[in-house]
Amino acid sequence: MSNSSTIIDQVQQVNGGEAGATSGAFPNTSVQTSDSPILQIRDFNVQAGDTRILKDIHLDIPKGKITVLLGPSGCGKTTLLKCLNRLSDLHPSLKVKGQILIDGEDIFHPTQDLTTIRQKMGLLSQRPFPLPMSIYKNIAYGLKIKGIRDKKVVKEKVEKHLRDVGLWEEVKDRLHGPAARLSIGQQQRLCLARGLAVGPEIILADEPTSALDPISSRKIEEEFLRLKEDYTLIVVTHILRQAKRLADHIVFMYFGEIIEQGTPDEIFNHPKSDILKQYLQSGH
Amino acid sequence: MQKRKLLEEQFFLWLMRIVTLSIILVFLFIMGVIIKKGYHAMSWEMISQEPQGGFYFGKGGGILNAIVGSLYLAAGSTFCALLLGLPVALGMNVHWVTKTKFVGAIRFLLNALWGVPSIVFGAFGFALMAYLQIRASLLAGIITVTLFIVPIFIRAFDEVLRTVPQGLMEAAYSLGANRTQIAFIVFFRQALPGFITAILLAFGRGIGDAASVLFTAGYTDHIPQTVQDPTATLPLAIFFQLSSPIPEVKARAYAAALILTAIILIISLVSRLSTRRFKKNIL
Ligand SMILES: Nc1ncnc2c1ncn2[C@@H]1O[C@H](COP(=O)(O)OP(=O)(O)OP(=O)(O)O)[C@@H](O)[C@H]1O
Ligand SMILES: [Mg+2]
Image (tube, rainbow over all chains, first blue to last red; front, side, top):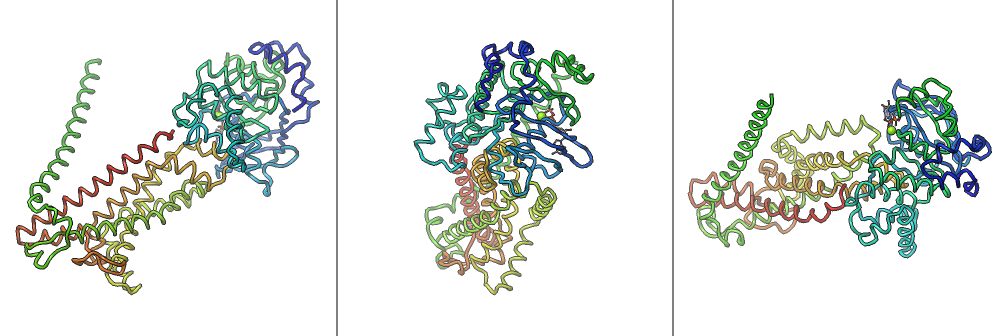
């Protein structure tokens, strides 16, 4: 986490929207190799019946960075994310082969404790799903699962995480009101706060802004750029401009395979494969 | 084109209005008949007293025995159906959710049981009584009615649970919740209004069914003191009195029907109002 304040990061944060476009000027190609990856995905295959959804995925996720997954619909981005916190267990039709190592430990090892694994990864889904309880309890719930019950500590943490996502001022007067009454954008930020409260190392975000208006989307993006100080983020998006704004590292997938990966500059300005070139053209 | 569309819309609008209206009319008609035929016989005595000597020939007394008996029976069997059914319904949607074939088989069986007429459950309960060596009693009635309403309760609650969004479940799992926490805290809260509706449905079917209690619960003029006593029930009170040639007694059958309907209406009203509180948190 201490390595997260490199010059490149700072420039990107200051520059905000234009960061992606200008980052090519900096030699951050070496970032990935010099950092120790937080996640190592090795020979990873997912199959449903006879169709292979993910094929021989080999990927390192750099710590303290934002990795963006790009690719056309149905290429397996969501499936990959769900495997990372083993939500794939809920789908018996999915057959998983290979390894995903977090801090050197295999996520799919039979003796792995699911709760620990899932608490290391906060998931932000396409649509917000607040728990059917009050705003306050939504965040306190994760803390309770972690065994934090001291009222004072819980209260502090709820406030801290709501502030982290910029929601505190908006909801501080109705903390005990139902979370379902918040706007969709607010709900999404609440879900982010809820995920943060569990104390994850990695945040998985699956098209986190696709249900949001531009302003709410921007808020989430700003949040992400702030969060990478302390967390590693993996973000799936279909919005190329968003990928440019956010990404330190981009992975392009196509039909379950990783076709290309690299810095935003490499991917957007110097794509190598024809598939990626086509994708970028159609995507604008 | 435009005009045709408008016509079509008008047609279906009116069709809907007519159908809705006729349903309301049928309901009012039924209520009207029951009230018209039963209200002479309605009195405080009717709902506050057990039958006196000669009651079935038109003399004094009331059907408190059947009212209380029915409430005991329906409450008891709804409670048992809940104990049996809740784990099954939650299990089908949380714990065994990955075992699609197994869950599919359970659903199939429950659907089949739902379709079995209550008289069959009555006959089964009767056979069970002989096997367990218990006589017609509140207990035997509760066992039989429980068997009858448990598939109704599970299927109704299951339908509600299936509408709980997958994303909500995944969100809770992502926080590290285990299955039991998900079942109770997340699912149950989300589905609470539906849960209450399911209980109500089971209760309504239980209190209104005559065939399942005909051989199993017996009939008596007294309020049962223990579960081993036989008990009167409202459907049978209606049944027996309606077959009487004496007009006063016939009228009492309608009064009993009125009481039965009123009980069901009151219970649904109360539960609707009480679920309103819980609805606010639902997605
Ligand atoms: N449980 C499952 N059983 C069978 N097939 C599945 C299952 N889950 C996903 N798939 C298939 O795997 C493929 C990849 O799906 P996935 O949701 O990962 O795509 P995606 O890249 O996230 O697409 P999108 O951008 O549209 O969200 C699709 O063809 C999908 O039909
Ligand atoms: Mg997806």
